Length: 136
Image: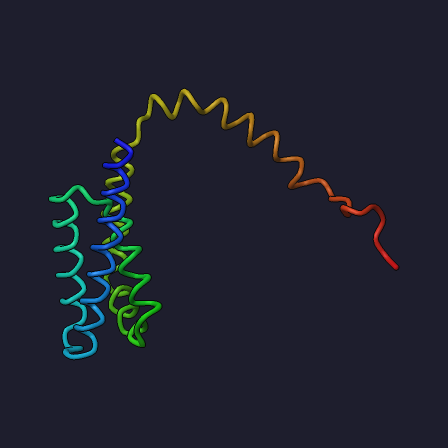
């Protein structure tokens, strides 16, 4: 089972590196309609990841790593991603919010309140320097 997980993670990183490489090639030779190219890359990568049971977030992290560190085109890609970020965030957080287990959240609420109230005085009270009194 551990081998299967390692294979899926390695495949996710490899596919992400490939997607990043393809984006670099596209930006180097075509560099037209970047918004459409980014949207197509996102949708195709999501479908490939779903089909082959890859970790989608890891695929995109690897792709971003490759573009950021191995090409001078990171700013062109970033501009295109900024244009589509809001709709992506809306869909992501709506989907994530719809999947929240309210019963589980309510069960953990007392523990969360105890932890938050236990940490609150450290935020309000003045702090002492770690080495005792400060100064020369």
